Picture: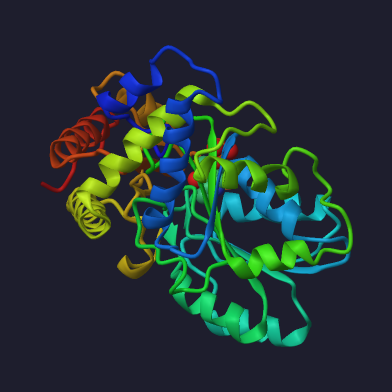
Length: 368
Ligand SMILES: *Cc1c(COP(=O)(O)O)cnc(C)c1O
């Protein structure tokens, strides 16, 4: 029950465990091409260009950042925690002039504050984290996409902790790049960076004046490969993660069979159930209200008197695995519970019981 790697479906693990084939074997080309097609449905971006690349979520951040920024570009980074801060540092490496708008812990940056900043100067790019895994705060992408459209600014959504678990309508919401990594709500072991890029962003990339400052990430290398696989032709730039792509095809198929609407509703219901149980135990959450609380994970503060180290030790002896805090300055003050992917109501019940017992063994007596 950590926010990634999550627990994977047995059918996905069977596919990952297949005998590794050539990256140009017909069955592999089919798995790759089919996965690209299914990504458009999961991202709700019928017009987008999908990419499947060997690497982690951080590589996806790097790929979107390096292809869409040029030295001297103004970039606005909206941060709701650890991963927003990471993006600011990453974009500076490519020579971007970064302005960081940082939310208070547990809150989001107001849309009016974003608009005020966009009025000040000509921005090329804006990034935000759909769900920041350090705080469990969820940002509403729709108004930000509208601002991107209004001010002619490209929008990048870090969806590593949201895609396939939170509502995302990439085309409808004018999001130019939405990326994730395989090991979170997409439900495949770590090792794949996944993204869908809008036609507007591909056009901006084509019109660059300087070469992309990162060789591996350069879309010039990967776009022909993605096109070839989708047309069921062999291609090569760097060897793809063959076994993980086999798992991805199975997992995307499971996701689409559940249906996006049902899947989003299931995540939302389980998250609500979990938070209600935590409130009943007297625990407060980092996100300041329900509207900005993620469906994919929760981050409860320890109640007064409970020591984080002792709590995590008690949990390690229980039936569930939970994560500690991630924000460096507050990491011993809260813990994190992932509830994404194939999580069930039963998993939530077992987790709540384990949290309750661990709190008790730390000398805290829950109100109920
Ligand atoms: C996990 C995560 C990342 C980084 O992904 P890695 O696969 O660990 O590199 C980036 N952003 C968010 C929101 C994440 O949850």
